[in-house]
Length: 252
Image (tube, rainbow, N blue to C red):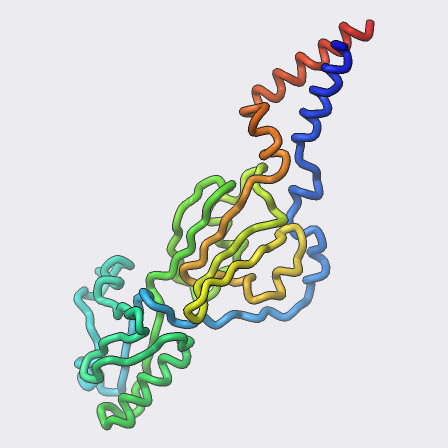
């Protein structure tokens, strides 16, 4: 009876161990070698903060269309956000001289083109250059990662792997084959499941993160199984040692 109990406990402990297949990323990585990179274009959403700069051959002519509260060398991201253009729930920004402009669901390129056309067609400026950037882009990462939290980024394109890198990577207990990503897109909530052990996700629109995405890493099977039995690695080693000792004693 004691021997059966010891064997059962050992099986339970072994079942709580993750396999190599569950832990390794991109197990078919060679299939992506040489493939073209398809960058995603981000569309502007409510609560985005835009930095918009208008340039002309005569700098003084563009001054009424630019807002700048900070001097050269004094700008940081917080100050830029304070003086940026907040996109309303209806997708509007209030731009100097031009008034309200709807930029909802426009790409950065489309927003630049629209503002330029309004300036030219309204007789305000001749051949201006318009630069638009989203300056409050962020991604929230929760669950089995080393440092959960909300992370800001200024790049136009970052991958889900880079985003997870901000959070210090998954813990050994993270479920790598079922990462949940939620996204607000065109006024609707989109939820998808991503398998980091397979490169197939690299060919989808979810390879690149968009502002306000949320990534959730749930615990893997061994972590869930062990949660009610073994609290940490020290306990695991201790219990394993006891079980092995019991087996040796009972089988002599």
